[in-house]
Image (cartoon, rainbow, N blue to C red; front, side, top):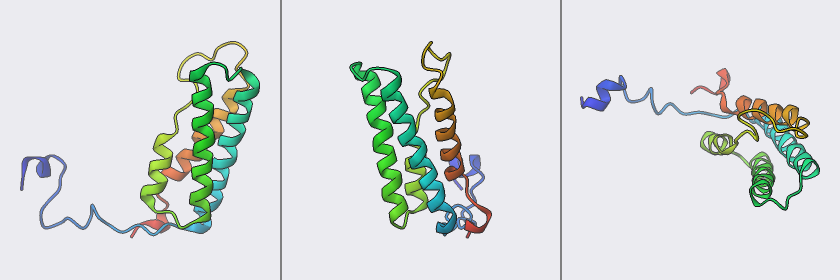
Length: 130
């Protein structure tokens, strides 16, 4: 066994634990994707209202949330894989990581909804373990 294998507790004879198949529960995942899509759309819309999109950085973030909402819709309408869900979830960044600037407080509950919806998608459900 190599150094990294030992470090991460991976034994050559026991590789299947790392590659266990995951079968997504689409009856649960599709509503979760809808919730994320709706939350991202609401956040992007409120961001347009709360501050001018003349600022290129702000406009970029608004466009990013709109794009991610579109990706959530596409995944919801298809048969997503675990990797696709994780790729989507890990692209989501909160609007604010520190103090909220004055006048933008209305975005905090929407940001919290997006983060909560993303976290629900990130977690593997018990029935999905292979």
